Length: 223
Image (cartoon, rainbow, N blue to C red; front, side):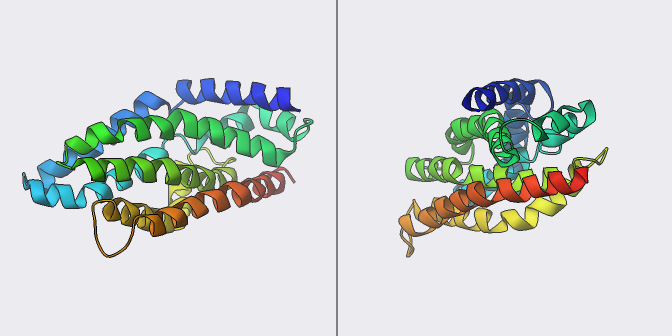
């Protein structure tokens, strides 16, 4: 079973970089969103540095949604999802493996480039470190929550918008605590550890529960 899951992980990582949602597309989309904001609010460096964490988190959230609709849809279209259902590995582990591959291909590059893009928003070193740490801790939650929406829309031809509508409300707590922890890294009344640990807990809870919800949705879809 371990060999099958490892082969699936490698396959999904390769497919994620070929089909929409690869690292290059996510990073370019991330860059576009970060670049647009200074043009829209003006060259006020103090304002940009204050809202920088929120801008990076919103951009990362939207970039994470890229390719989520294809997480199960392509397998549904070519029939490989039926083979995965009947394979030796439990469907929950299959979902978790696909989520890990999607996170590594889409979200991890965003975490890596976030400090560079943060410099465009006049953020200082503590703020850059805080945003990077919170994105690393919080983006897994976005991916696993996205798997639920992707499973519910796997049979739809153009389910990308519906997936985003389903996932965005669930992602609000992750966004709130991610921005709060990033802002706390630069000082304030709330210590950094409090929202950061809540963010980690959200990711762990999503990783533990979302594969079961997504697998149940995929099984219901096949009935």
